[in-house]
Image (cartoon, rainbow, N blue to C red; front, top):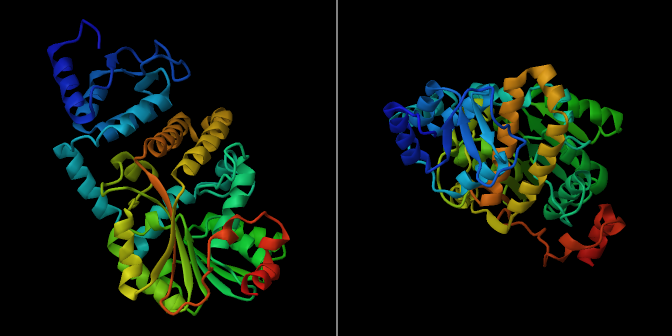
Length: 413
């Protein structure tokens, strides 16, 4: 801040530094100075007024997120670099206000049957036209898998669908239940390339409608059934359980219930995979993300996820961390989002566009810094016999050898 700051401004600045660390901050009018596109050696927050400074002192996460969204906070320099610096620091000391807000969010966003539908509607029932601006053509809204760092996003998302399918060791004729299917890409990929039948559950109306139409166009409606319902209502017996990007929305208090549902679906002989954003140690999700972007979300540690598989004696077969793959995925998303930024502003307003820019940029920073991880966990029932002998099958050259019946003839011979 400049030399003309008042004693109150200096007091607020000290409070911000105690809570969030020594982030460079200065006061200025909202209309002058450099914007986000200007690079500088040390990024600086430009705060428009004392009200915004006060919000930063009371709750740095909400204050910064809402201030940036509204344009009351600008970043002089590289936004990504600033967020990465902050992500590498220990979590800010929670203020009393932020603790109260966190408790209120946990109550109001509880993942009950009704609450989960409301939480998912907030994020995933935005128009598909919005997501089509910056996702790949298959509309895969989860971490891609880059066989080479230079792979395109489209190629990496196709590789991810195949990577997951290989890990599940799918046999032609098997049945798969997928919990939280997004726009349907994985279910369609498994049915098309591995000869399985899939029931895919999702409570996002927009996503289910998109997936059903795509299945119809591709002639796969007879092999894939998209069901607009909660995962807790899964019924029937299946060979395989798959969940990509849903565990973050389940809520830690429901992990044992999820384990019950998985065991009911695949018994002691089935196989499964959980693909989820995780952490190295327990900490709550950023309050701004929970309130504005992902209501009801929780990012677990591996230890916490064991509450899903251990009570039913399910064996963990494989754990892979794709943290850097998610950072690269998000870089592609943000680049495409910035190309369409003016379109987003026209359709949804500047506050919405800035909010999503901050969410995508902050996610890149968190994965780069190691504040977030991306885990794929493969498991099986205690009596499962369909388990690969080695991991070699995961890395065979793509083509006929990794699809359909040819895989199994080679694998079991």
